[in-house]
Length: 435
Image (cartoon, rainbow, N blue to C red):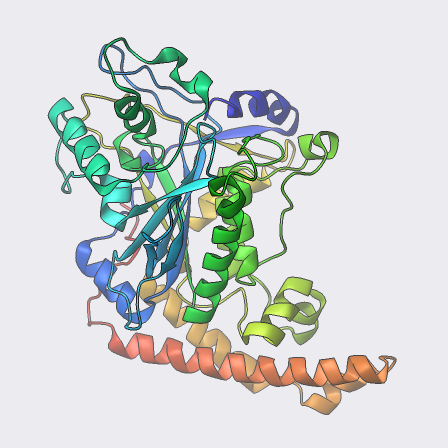
């Protein structure tokens, strides 16, 4: 989005690195998607997507800065058509199928909504294109017509200044859908993407839905007007805090004063790295480390789950290469530590280590980790002795925490082992294998 250009100037002080999905295309097949959904029917997918560069001479002129954009897909969630502004709900009582969900996008253009929802994972990411198809102008227009028929932007008002660039003869409605392609739907038409997929259960997905609906309600009901801001209220604030509602990590408050926010705001590419590390690398073998992590402790006590666990996979997919509408030499900036380059190293590790991108390797890793944890876990008495100075009320919390930890590890080990047993002998990689 254009506002990220301002962030780049500040980010230069911290160090920047550009990513390109062309080197790490790990897009999943339809069979792999069905396999994943059979094990994890409810999941969130948080995606950092690259800059956008539309070729001139066709429709509206659209471009964005290299800071990119963040979108979110929720499997098992549907649009709530009983509400006049964008709202979502669980799809139904049965387990959702692969691709049965909604893609959410935040956009500075919106006036009476923080986010919009697009039904169907495939349309959200690929529009009407099938794998390997060329993005022609006709396919681009066909996707817009389908988006209008779906009513993705029905009831959504744009800020008046957005229409300053509207071509003569184009209706306001058509212009809204034109401006939203590759940002709010059909993301892959013009953007590379890096997605971190996080399994959730029905209870935690309900928490995500409740948070997102609360976020949109004051705008849809006319009590507030949405004012997107790169530093204080951007697209990554929304996806980060949706997962905070599910217990993955602490909230990143939106709407803070500008000065502290200038040096501490969520960035799409960094959020991708942070989420992959959070869901794969928390030292859950250490009772003390988990207890000292406030968000992990709350998650265990409230939802009997841990932020790190099996099924959290990365996926990278470049924009459609054979493309009549968008340029495909795209960048996505990581805000890095200038001396160590830690974020760049972490990003590269994600796509170099199989357990981050391949379902079988991921399940094998966690099944083995859980077995080691169960063998080495200290008894409750030893855990309490290590915190002998704790007050009686805290000791009660410690005991409940310990019991939740034991149940969670045992349940996750059982699920990881069952998942491994259900895989075909030569399973398709859910997030692909590196080329």
